[in-house]
Image 1 (cartoon, rainbow, N blue to C red):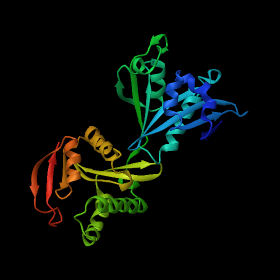
Image 2: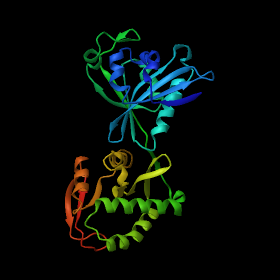
Image 3: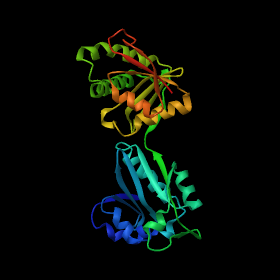
Image 4: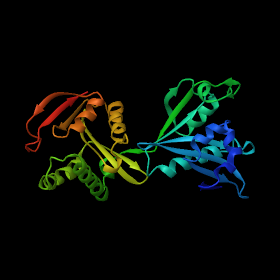
Length: 296
């Protein structure tokens, strides 16, 4: 099978698109602004389509996924969903899809790695000019599912190679320069060996990957987050939040220290439920950088 990105004359695939979204005016809302992928068989006959839109902040939406009737239940829909996930893995962190309440459709997406996100009440009754029926049921609400395109890896000491440590220290350096504006060049150079040592020895190290590239990492000792740094290119995309929530849910963390001179970090943790219970005048190395000790 061959999958191609189509950039011109997209409406020529309307018959396939209508299999998943039966009102043409609704398709018109997203087709031109979205990426259209078409899967063709060995004879170059289109058998499946998918449309993906950029919803901002690293979030994509799979607006349409359809397979020709004669080719359904043969794995082509799953193949297209997996292709889309791989295609965008290096540039976005979350793929959304909205669907009706059909058990069959929900089961399909869950088998492709999607999990429940949220519900938009009365979506079908408000946006379509006729009842939409699926599996004998008139659809009312839109059920949104989400799939993370970020791979989280918990790396034991044995997998922390010199090359990986070098990459993560470089990520830390870039992140600190973009967020810790109170640090001087000399401060950063002095801290670098401590960061290298900490990454090598911390008990739990989780790294977020987009494709093969580390874009964030989180270190945990006991019930405390000791380090969390995100690549500047991924600021504001929810990757740090995803790591902290993973730490809360799976590692039962309760504590974190934040530089007082980094108010964005303090606000980030407050938004996630942490509050300050203690303040120190210096950091752990004795540098004159006040620390806010926060607790969940």
